[in-house]
Structures are given as structure tokens and as C-alpha cells.
Image 1 (tube, helix red, strand yellow):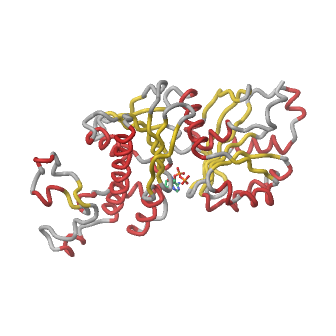
Image 2 (cartoon, protein in one colour; image 1 turned 90 degrees about the vertical axis):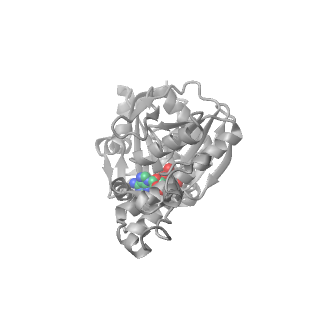
Image 3 (cartoon, helix red, strand yellow; image 1 turned 30 degrees about the vertical axis):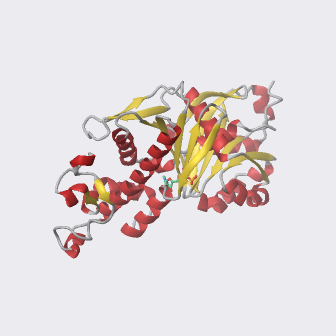
Length: 367
Ligand code: ADP
């Protein structure tokens, strides 16, 4: 029987600085006996979560990421992936309460800073105890699980600079060690991973996905990540940045710096051919969004490369929700890692990009 497994519902939660990621295991092997003894609240919650893909005003289920036929603790089921802004936690708890969540005696596995910040709210509002796990342990466990379950989890970008023939190519990550993780969330953490259990956090930067979104909103007046990415897709950073060719008139050949390389981000206004007011008037919100995206992405790529050199590692796995609906950043990272390492380093990406912490949390659940 299933007597040694913790009671349903099974959730894993990663409450980050920007987004809360929720993974829900929907059992698909419920026996008649189990269904008969199942409390109604539990059945209602399962139905609510699996029949909808929007929850309240700001909760979304990423249906394209759903994983079917997974086995966890001997149970067969489906993993569902849900996200909402961490700033909406109070509303989310009210929603959970209205669905009867407080009637179930439950423990939810949680990681991320919000597992500490919101612990008391969970207990008070929905009678939930948070079992807390380390976010990097969870990240790694979630990554290992997803890669083992999903044959097309890991991929790289072929021909990243050629819009016509660039493509996602499946990467066999079954023999992964050692590798570098660059997790681009609100901020950035870099981990060097030597084996399934041996890893260390070697670096990080506060200039991350949150910085991109914050600066982009300030510069363009946009209000959402999706809008910021859409603007960037329509913009041209070379109208904002100062390129090597703006300084040299072409390539800086002696040190192999191509003319179209950004020499100085956001400084295309300071000197140059046109007077700066004239040049500034040629710049659009789209150009500013693109320049912000390129600045943040290239800075992360350069930190990633230095870390890889220092650790003598040649595969770098980029993850985190900054990469969500963001092929521009992924392709830029793919190109930059390859170009500046003279082809010795490879940038890898993952389909469940922002969910590994939450997955890993669910897997560590014991009761
Ligand atoms: P954290 O755990 O710090 O919240 P995530 O991996 O969830 O980190 O990534 C957060 C980043 O993802 C944001 O800073 C933003 O750049 C990007 N992002 C992607 N989609 C969204 C969204 N719908 N709302 C807010 N930020 C988003």
C-alpha cells in the first residue's frame, strides 16, 4: 500500500524575490477504495487546479510544461506547473482558503526566501505547516529529476545569430558532471556542480532579471515582463550603445574586437557624429528595452565565462525565469559563450527553466 507516503495533496513551492513557483502532483492511479475515502475538499482542490489554467487575477498554469506519467514515491501522476507574483501571496492564500484548504491538515514543502517570510501567514490563513528546504539543494534535485524524466529537457541553440536557420537542438545531459549552473532570477547565482551531491556557490551578481525588469519599466514606462520582452524584440540597441566601430571606425583588429561589439553600454549619446540631443530623439522605447536586455545579459554571460574558466568547466547551464519567453537573451548567451571561449564552452538551456527549486522541494517531502 501507500501507507508510508505523506498524505495528499503534494505540493512543492519556491517563493522567490519576484515569482512564486508551485508544483502540484496530481495522482492518476487513485484506486476505488482511495477515491471512496478521499475527503471532498481534497477532490475539489484537485479539480480546481487541473481544470483551470488561470487562478485569480495573477496566477497562471504553464500547461505546455506539464509532465505526465511521472512516478514519485511509488505513485503515478502528472506534475502541474503554476506561478504567480510573490507580491500576491496574501491574495493567493485567501484563494486557497476559499477552496477549503484550511480544512486539510497539510504540510507544504517550500524553499526560497518566502518560505521564511510567509511562514506565519501560511499557518494562520490556511493551517499549513511549511517544511523548509535549501534552495540550491532543491534546484539540483529538481534538475536531476526533470532531466531524467524528460528526454528533451536540455537543449542548446544552433546558429544563434542567424534568425533564418537558428534552432533549438536537444542535448544529451545524461553525463553532466562537472557543469556550471547560472540561475538568473531576480538576482543571479552561479554554482559549480561536481557530482549529484557535491556543489558550491561560487559567485553571483545583483544585476539580474529583476534589474532588467526594473530598469526597463523606468526607462520605457512598461509594466510587465512580457511587455518588456516584446519591446526589446522590436528594438535596436546599437542606437543606444557605443560600439567598437563608433570609436575605431571599424574592428579593433589587434585585439580581435569586432566593430559591432558593444564597447560601452548606454553611452551612444555622449560623443560621436551627431550631437547628443539629435541622437537621443532617434531612440525609441523599443531601443531602450533592447539595450537594457543586452546590457544585463552580456554582463551575466561575462561573469559566467570567468567562473567557468576559474573552475575549468566547459558546460554552462543557464536557468531561471529571466529566460522565460526570452529567446533574445538565450541566443545572446549562446553566441557570447561560444565566441569568447573560441568554441570551447557551451551554453545549455532547460525547458522547465524556473521550476527546478519547486520540483526539488516536492521530491524531498517526507512525513
Ligand atoms: P526569483 O526566485 O528571484 O523570483 P525567478 O527565477 O522566478 O527568480 O525569476 C524572476 C525573474 O523572471 C524576474 O526578475 C523577471 O526578470 C523574470 N520574469 C519572467 N516572467 C515574469 C513574470 N511573469 N513576472 C515577473 N517577472 C518575470
